[in-house]
Image (cartoon, rainbow, N blue to C red):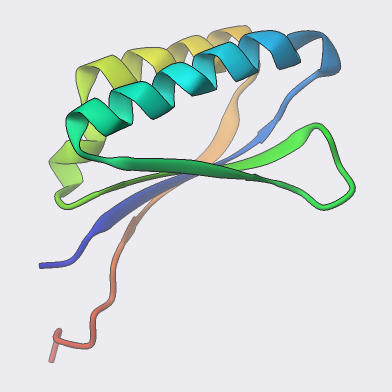
Length: 94
């Protein structure tokens, strides 16, 4: 069964970085409780550009209400992000 991944590329204004950090820590806790994996990367040489990931076993897992609410708070308080949902390619599709 393929895994599912959501990715977001987000610019974080310097005056919003504290709020972003606080809300991202909440996403990490909520993901752990929901049995999901969340992580993020910062662009090399940039303090304001992040690539966020949320991974689950089912597409519906990514719609966890608590996580969706926190991601909405990030979007409203920090800024929007270009997002995409991905389905794992396992090679078993044929």
